[in-house]
View 1 (cartoon, rainbow, N blue to C red):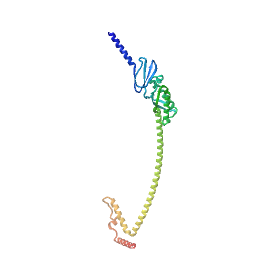
View 2: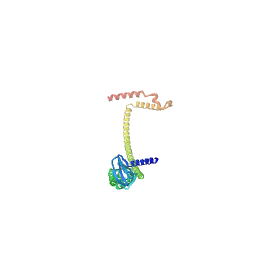
View 3: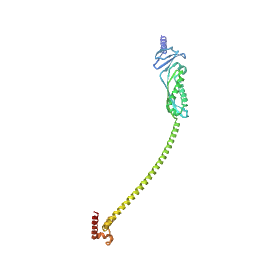
View 4: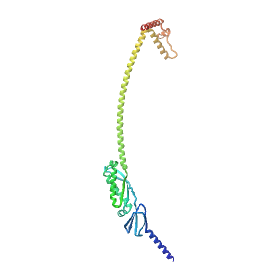
Length: 306
């Protein structure tokens, strides 16, 4: 009795496992390939629940959405023998699972082959241009040629290459350092030339300023000497008129000026001999007769002038 129950349970388990093996589901965004005994027989491109022969049919599911391939960076030689480090990104889609299975089998194999083809096309196209063209608008048609070449080669494999982009393009470290050193030396040379030119201009401006300063000073000194001479002449003329008008008063006035200068510059105590000629006018004052005569002459001259 127990053996019968065991066999019944085992048969039920086998039947359940067989029923589950005969069922599979295709999700949205997927495509399934039915392979029977190693030979593909059908492509399922609509989502839903499906049945297959258990233990005979194998279901291979491929992603029908856009797939991204980003291979590692690689060094590429340009047409002018300059080296750059480039990295591409490729978007592709599996459009024919049957041809894809017959030619590439797995997605890993397809990614590997696609990376090789993209690298080959990249090296071939970049080997025909120089660095200046790569940095200009010509880069667009170069990338377009690479995409067209890769798409043509993978179309027979059931793969649609939608887009190939140049993700980055940098100079190698040693090349960048060499370019930086060359640019640095060039800028230093230009800086030295500009400093030398500026020093020359400064010397020229300084010499011009010194010449103008010398001319201005000489003209100013000449004008000052002329003005000083004219002033001295005018002063002498005025002095001569004053002396001729009243010589005694002028003598007394000059003596007072001498006393003021001598006594103002001396200490609080000054010792002089009483009979000194210097103190004659200081003690006696001007002669009244001379002063009166001078006053009368002044009045006479004034009346003549009127």
